[in-house]
Length: 97
Image (cartoon, rainbow, N blue to C red; front, side, top):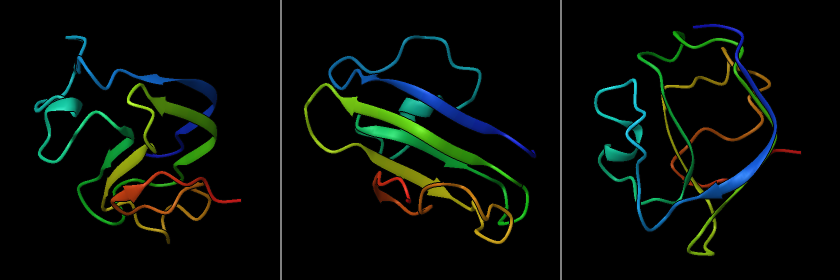
């Protein structure tokens, strides 16, 4: 996959009743191991180079639990995504400046 940008959106994460039955993936993004309803980003690529030129710009999401949003990220290589906009590692969601 190449050239995806998520830009200028805000919202809340339903931390209490996860899932809306709209998944197109298996497993569904909210049923993956470790997901706890605080994930602002769940990004999994097959390899470090299979996802290219992804960007996250001006995105603000807040879990309803009023805790810090988090990220789950696998194989989003920085060489293939030099302007991703977040550090791709599991942990707190912190947009890069």
